[in-house]
Image 1: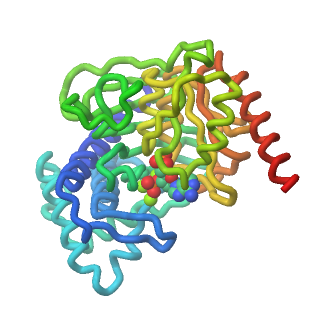
Image 2 (image 1 turned 90 degrees about the vertical axis):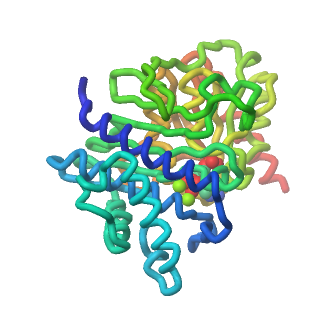
Image 3 (image 1 turned 180 degrees about the vertical axis):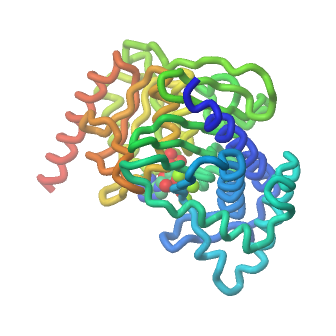
Amino acid sequence: MAYEKELDAAKKAASLAARLCQKVQKALLQSDVQSKSDKSPVTVADYGSQAVVSLVLERELTSEPFSLVAEEDSADLRKDGSEDILQRITKLVNDTLATEDLTKAIDSTLTTDDLLRATDCGTSEGGPNGRHWVLDPIDGTKGFLRGDQYAVALGLLEEGKVVLGVLACPNLPLTSIAGNKNSSSSEETGCLFYATIGSGTYMQPLDSKSDPVKVHVSSVENPEEASFFESFEGAHSLHDLSSSIASKLGVKAPPVRIDSQAKYGALSRGDGAIYLRFPHKGYREKIWDHVAGAIVVTEAGGIVTDAGGKPLDFSKGKYLDLDTGIIVANEKLMPLLLKAVRDSIAEQEKASSSL
Ligand SMILES: Nc1ncnc2c1ncn2[C@@H]1O[C@H](COP(=O)(O)O)[C@@H](OP(=O)(O)O)[C@H]1O
Ligand SMILES: [Mg+2]
Ligand SMILES: [Mg+2]
Ligand SMILES: [Mg+2]
């Protein structure tokens, strides 16, 4: 199979990073949370996860030139007053790597300088040429802080196209979340979704060696029977617009609101049939929020486009250049969805121009 070595490395990296996140989420302290310059939250686990993935990829794929486009960087960790937090992250990463006996291979225990260096491996800009790993070390940090859904999302771009994606979703139930969104019941949770180009999408439990199962998007053809996913956070997506689209389509079920690319994972196994994402005006989508999720859904038979029906173009660097919004559905529902999206956006524009 193509990309076998890369897939093994990516699964190992994302699973180990997820283990670090689980540990932090269990014992989350307010002092572990900082605010970035754009006011979004970042935790010791975001940094720790990024360092773990970067170190594991570097170790497992020694023969490859290594370029990583990742969400976090070390600027805030280098500021005066950050020494304690940097020590904590370094210990977390060392403890996590030690569980896999990777520390020996990674040249004994990491220092805080090693940690900073590993974090900054992720400063590549991506683009249309060559290979770039794309990482969101915790996607859905707000969900992570609430104790809800989040994902470690790792993808690989080759000449601007996504060829591999892994999503580790520690809080996602192994069985369908349909009608059971952030499930905090005793149900078993922790899913690892993965896909390589042309080979389908698979899911396996995050923390066990049980066999992977091949997954497929929902085959629902009648929108009345479809359910749709959207961001939990109203600040990330226009809930009013999705509600207007859903009612045009005749969707009966209420929206399923969950954080992170866990939505793409859940869609790839048919928990819901549609994903609607319409950021507020002026927001620019970053590639790490969609690379892994997009291939996980497309290899499971789904379609991911912008609101105008164009495929997402991951070759433009860190940002996605797109017409309003991102939508996902199966092949049968997509034409109806595109029409409902077009009509709802036109109505919204008409209403706002008449104000
Ligand atoms: N105003 C905004 N509009 C749309 N997306 C936003 C946003 N502010 C942050 N985001 C992105 O939304 C992601 C979470 O998506 P979701 O709403 O599906 O959980 C965040 O990822 P991080 O949590 O990795 O920062 C962040 O990149
Ligand atoms: Mg963030
Ligand atoms: Mg993200
Ligand atoms: Mg993130």
